Length: 203
Figure 1 (cartoon, rainbow, N blue to C red):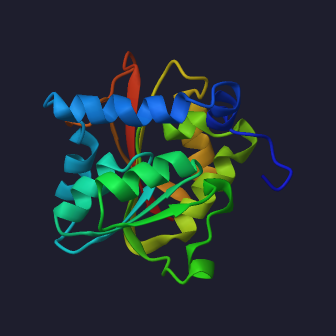
Figure 2 (figure 1 turned 90 degrees about the vertical axis):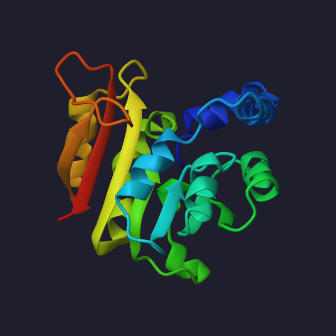
């Protein structure tokens, strides 16, 4: 972990080594039951031309990136948890799935161009980061965007990362806020919203 503070996800899995497997099976069960697990991906797909390049940042077991791949986009998924990456490779073949730390994101060093049309960070990923790495992660997103690319994030209000603090971190990281929503199905953000979907471009 290069001497940095562990993320909340790393703390969870250290305390409960079965947590990652539980998380994988949770989404497999939801999919088998016909529940909608790709709402985030549909929004991102609507923002892209066909054949867009997408970074699924904190991709987990691959539900978002897998949908976007099937929709015709080139997808790279990155997650710190090798159990989740193995599940993504098994359940959603096609994208490039990589075990990696978002706080150290440097895809060109792995031979992958840093010109993504969209970077999606769904599933409360931002709140699982170690607080000391949040702005660093956002800055690395900015450096991986194409000139007209966009970053799309979403997380709940009750997870220890206040929305104004997040938006300030994004600004400091070189991102410009273009749109705020309260859900992935385009409901407007208000002062009472308990969820934030934020769309940024690169400054």
